[in-house]
Amino acid sequence: MEEIKIRILIVDDHSLMRQGLKQILEIEEDIEVVGLAVDGEDALEKCFKLKPDIILMDINMPNMNGIQALRRIKDMGIDTKVIMLTIHDDREYLFETVNIGAEGYVLKDAESNSLVRAIRNVYFGESYIHPSLASEFVREYKTRGNTTDKVYNKNKLTRREYEVLTLIAEGLNNKEIAENLFISEKTVKNHVSSIFKKIEVNDRTQAAIYAFKHNIKKV
Image (cartoon, rainbow, N blue to C red):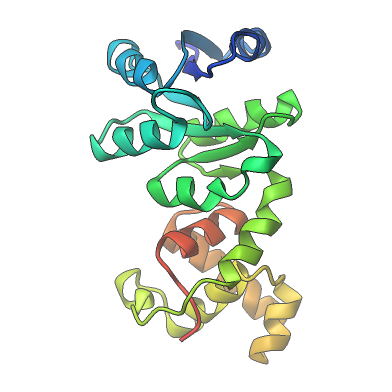
């Protein structure tokens, strides 16, 4: 059976960063760097030509920045998935890029194994937000406005599952959810399992991302 090779396009305007990422990733047997790009325009051109599975996209670049390139990729319906790379000062872009459709968000100073994990997770259809940003994601989510969209109908969630999902998105654990809804922790665990299956996610961070994208809040 042929081994999986995850094809990567690295996009960054700094040569040292491009080459450094390339060296880190090429150590992995299941990852292949198929191209390097210097800005968003270059990324789009090479995306069409090379058809990578995943683009590692820097945010701050000249000519066309990473957010503009991400929006173009998603607007054109290109299948390639995108992981945004950023520094700590760029955290305000997290929600904008997730809302546009980025599948991952990784800090540039993350350990190499975090980047590799993000690549593999995204390749297999999951979302990835760097752990140090996950709590910030939840905090910002809490400030978003309420929705009148009954998402529990559209996604076949029961009203109770919808309530549990809103509390997951607020960062509550199973014990806290149980206390909030006056139900047992075992019942919460069953609801969480059902929710994950229905909205097709694998963990609480992905559930929070789903809730953010669909503007799911308490009603």
